[in-house]
Image (tube, rainbow, N blue to C red):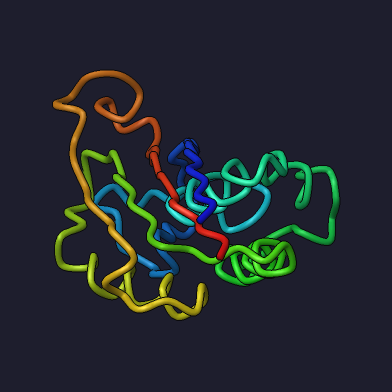
Length: 161
């Protein structure tokens, strides 16, 4: 049996006038902030995509969805995730599981975790039990702690029979 592990990371600035989308869910930030980016800036989904691509040495999401291409302006990251899963399947690999941690001071993510897991799992063709999503704060340290941005780290385990 062949197995591969990949890790992913993403961070986006918090700015006024943008929606806050994490795990495909639109959330309300207490400060009225959202994530800045060319697509919907969903750091959770972006980190998972990079973990999947990294596991197969396929580069990163910028290679497939460059921010210089107007085609991806405002793109739904869950749609992009489906395309990345297509690359995984085309090569004969299956996802065993993904795990992630979102680092944000606010908003509180616990009430939204199950919806995030379900949305991601659906787009990946997985059972929600195969998708781990956790949240933590940065204890007021760094860019996340100062609420300048939100980041996410993810890992993916793939197998090929």
